[in-house]
Image (cartoon, rainbow, N blue to C red):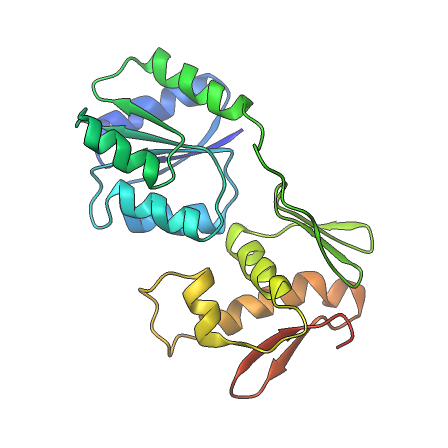
Length: 224
């Protein structure tokens, strides 16, 4: 099991990381809200432990950004503020559970285990584009029956294009839906990630899937 721990207090982060590793978890530790968003989008984690008071983006903003981008990993929020309003804000932002500091490590571990045991309450139907099958609930992709391993961001991009299959999707639309507003419109990040998808979904199968529309954007079309 892989855990993303977003905690800016170094002593706490080190202690929690060591405790989780002792229990057999693989742990990636970050200390800012921006890093939490980046790593959660780029890598797949089984759960996220997210401190509210992070430098830059706070935990609420991070949580909203991840949920808005389709990251479905369970999120356990940590905070020194135990008021009802803060707990409500965290849950409304998309957190699955809330733990108030100071806390016992055993309780954090128990809450994590409970979150990891939960299955998805609702399963989205698979999206089929030609010989590609995208399962949003399991976050898996296969082509011609072969599993294709995608990062969270790659998966979000493919899923967004698949929902608009057969239509030209502008780069600005992709930036709005797959990345957050901090990216400016001149960024080539969309082209870079389309390149990643092509390398994984087209090259091994000797078949085109994503077509460029010069000066506009991209179209996902099994007949390309």
